[in-house]
Image (cartoon, rainbow, N blue to C red; front, side, top):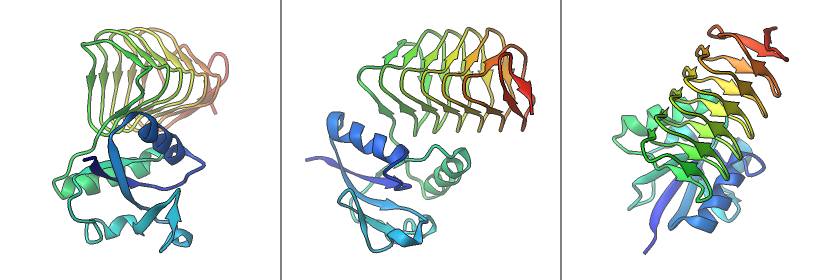
Length: 211
């Protein structure tokens, strides 16, 4: 019998659609409901899965027998909020990892992480809670990717990079070795990061510069 799974955030044309596709192809879970704050979805279904209520209505509307959870959004702040809510009720989150991902055996991964198709993660990497590492990204040796980071598709981080919590790397970002990117930073798509990035800043370009 499949274990029952609840998902948070139901935007099917965004990260939720990717998650559902991976779950349908590779995982033995029965997705029994979404929690989502889009009022237009209340009392409706998404991809045949019922919307159980607002996120803050969890766990009052939680079906019986559910103890598996995952948050399906690329929004770092929303993932953080959902994670804290789930943990405050004593539950744990699953990791969703595509079977094509290549991950070194000594990689450490927190809970609620998503690792997409054709991702490559080499040795001595630490990945925090609710981190997203999307399609085709490469995380090289001795990296630290802290909680709630979103690494977009085909980004590359070279050796000994540290990415602090809640940072976003756009599509195709490259980070050279020994860089520290501060928390809540935003790195625009296609940027090449050659210097440390301050917390709460936005950088774009080649090389990346603050905007």
